[in-house]
Image (cartoon, rainbow, N blue to C red; front, side, top):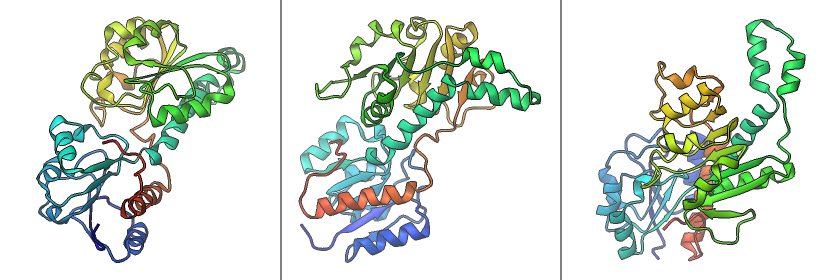
Amino acid sequence: MSSSLIIWSNVSLPKSVSDLLRDRLGGHTLIAPEVADKSNLVAGPPDPSFARADVAFGQPHPQDVVQSSNLKWVHLSSAGYTRYDTDALRAHASSRDLRFTNSSGVYNEPCAQHVLAMMLSVARQLNGAQDDQRAGSTWPYLPLREKSFLLNGQSALIVGYGAIGQRLAELLAPFQMKLMGFRRTPTGRESIPVRPISEVDAHLPTADHVINILPAAPGTQGFFDTKRISTLKPGVRFYNIGRGNTVDQTALVDALKSGRVDSSYLDVTDPEPLPASHALWTAPNSFITPHTAGGHVNEFERLTEHFLMNFDRFTTGQTLVDRIF
């Protein structure tokens, strides 16, 4: 491998973190497009300078990736990788031994904690107490005590059992819940029972909590459709930190209004931002965070450290962490 590599990055980093990245790359060259990408949720536009890159860190345009003759490794600044998960790009990567990694190791912890916060919020009726406070500083002592419950012994389905789901299962372990995960291909090495996603329908009517962490991918659009939502256990709590287009939001609003779904906690919607007129804003017990589950105060530092850790492994011929293909 060349002793000096060209690393292309369109991640918009704070100056202190950008300086750290340049310093830690040592004799390697860091290049960037004229406009850095302010979000790791969208790919940047095609960039002529990308053709020089040996390594990419961020969200390169898929067209640039396929057209590059120098590229050896792409490290995505996100956990999701839908736009790159195509037959054409996978075939190109395979033919050139082009490696792809993502940043699951950065976002599994904050996303898992976000879901846990949502679950504890509904269990301990924190939103209800806040609503009463804002409505006039009332003191609904008995109603809130009667609605509060323990997570202990309740059942939860984690639909889309990847890095986030694994960490969430660890965080939920002390509550002694009945957990079951679903993924495309279970490995048999998971810490909780995990079944193929094709078997989820048989279990949806039994769960007190349904946690959707499905990515946007072929076969997941509208996964939680009217039929599946109608089979959920009455009074279920529904969470989505996967992708908004995996849920039929009209069906979810109807289920919230009817009471079949007790409450929904959504960090993702379709579209984003969610229009001010959308029914989800005012549906009963609908709670929305603006795609912030992965956010944390030192996000860019951790993101950069994760890339640098993998860069060290790449330059020394070790196995890359969070490799997706």
